[in-house]
Amino acid sequence: MRSDIFRFVRAGLLVCGLGLVATPGAAAPAHGIAMYGDPALPPDFVSLPYANPDAPKGGEAVTGNVGGFDSLNPFILRGSAPWQLASLTHESLMGRSMDEPFTLYGLLAESVETGPNRDWVEFTLREGATFSDGTPVTVEDVIWSYRELGSNGHPRYRGFWQKVGEIAQTGPRSLRLTFNEDDRELALLAGLRPILQKAQWQGRDISEAGIEDIPLGTGPYVVESYEIDRSVVLRRNPAYWGKDLALRRGTNNFDEIRIEFYGDDTVLKEAFKAGLISYVREFNAEAWANQYDFPAVQRGEIVKSEIPHQKPSGMTGFVMNTRRAPLDDWRVREALITAFNFEYINDTLTGGRQPRITSYFSNSELAMDHGPATGRVRDLLEPFKATLLPGALAGYDLPIGDGTARNRKNIRRAMALLKEAGWRVQDGRLVNAQGQPLELTVLLQQDGLIGQATAMMDIYARALERLGITLTTQMTDKAQYAEREAQYDFDLTLMRRSLSLSPGNEQMFYWGSQGVNQPGSRNLMGLVSPAAEAMITHMLQARDRDEFVAATRALDRVLTTGRYVIPIHQYSVGRIAHKSQLKYPKDHLPIYGDGIGFLPEVWWYEAD
Image (cartoon, rainbow, N blue to C red; front, side, top):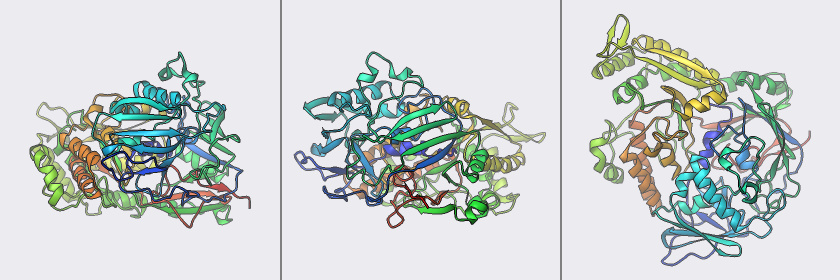
């Protein structure tokens, strides 16, 4: 996984929720909207509960990314842009509170109104909202942004646009979107589309934008300068239109945010120790415990902060590409999961400090029960009984090793599964009926977790050798990795999917069959599952929280028992090492912990 881990979380900005209980007629214009129930904050709220409204402005924050960049446009498929740009330089009609499962409050829009069953949503733009060049944000800009990104933007925007039946201006500062599907989340997703300036792209193809074509945004920061593959400097806009909004009070406090790029994580960490970077996120609990006692820490110049959260574990692990044989056979995938000696690997690499992910939504009320499916969950899955893999209804748990390096019991079980799938050992190699050996390649990117992932694969390769399987690790730079990942040119690769407390349409982007052959989709495993898509659809149409939870637990069963990923450890707490001058509100941490909307958004600089 990359040190810019929140690329995966960007898709987390797509996660869902709607507010204001539907009534037979339209709801009145409101300051916010939540998936179920009402927004937690009143119309006259002063600031987000996890922001410090009195935080001082000034100073700089320097962060490090591994790899490089060849684009400053995060809204198109072409090129690779720093992941931070989308949230720091651009805004949407509504802004999200990271202290609620999924609630939005007015940002570019001053109010939101929904129709019966939320089959339409109307926004009224806020007077005074401007782009960074001082020109006002108009309804025409908003409508153009929806159409342009929905048609020519990154694939993550296209699924939503296909569900819009009509978009039209309804007043001098208002517009309405009418949906062509029964999907209660769409009204919220509509509030999260980035807004670009139409005039900037008049007569130009945004999908072919070069690095010099930096999109104008409305956000608190602008790109001041850049050196390709070396650095990007963001400057806080002193004329930022929204600095006095309650949603923005106490946020975006640094005068300058600089993103430095490094060839690998080891060099990045050394730069941090040398004081060249303001903060790093550490994903290895063993390293956190034993490698952060260097002199700057001892002198108090560097502080170690742990940020808890209440979100699901999500899925981090080695995803198997089922587009390729023999990974299209669930028995082979189960054998590979069984041979992965997590208990030994975890003890060796993290000192056993990080628990394993047990399902996609583990550590939350959305997680599947590990016994037989019961009640509403079983009712939802029964129609798909014939297509479900073993364990979906009867119950499933990940194989548990004995903690030793040889892991004999699980190796024997893995071999039995492989024999059942038609594989046999010949001259020390596992071959199929045609005598072809089982050889696999794991593709890894040179980034934040490359050392840990490579160490895992070294141990794993030795276990697979005992089964007669050859596992080869290929490491590539960021650009090569992005291209190969987009074309699904791998057997296994490291995957991270951050999941929220209110999952929704992004689930179809992750697991929907439409992405199987579409380059650049997030469906890396090549999942084709009518059951999974039906559970996602039911989640989106649920009218109450209980039905939503049941559908999500059912989806968790389909995904987990599909054996698509070899899960590794979860990140139950965020670990940030930072310069002592960087402060954050410690008295009220958001339920999503360290994620989009936390660092650097609500931190500030305070001189010693």
